[in-house]
Length: 91
Picture 1 (cartoon, rainbow, N blue to C red):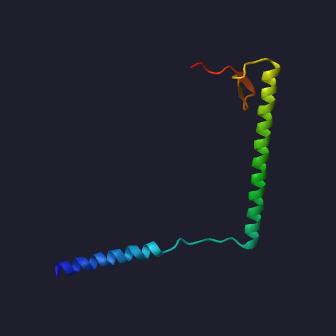
Picture 2: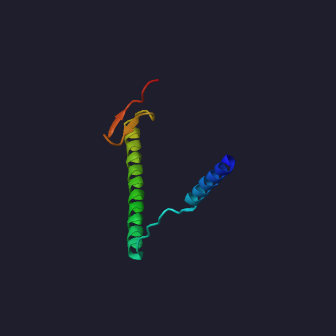
Picture 3: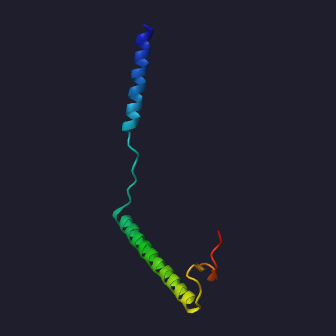
């Protein structure tokens, strides 16, 4: 009798776990207009990121020109935040 009850309890536990596993997470879907607005903002953000990366590359290229014009070592470090140049740290 005790074994039958234990088996029944385990079957109920496994059935409950299986039912929870099958339950899907609720999905929230924006309207078509909201989706289009989100897509436009996403594209704008991507374009802004690409422009930012290009601007940083231009800044670094200009820093390389400054190093070359001043005959500084190629290892000279440029800080794009402070626009300062410094010697590399010695190890």
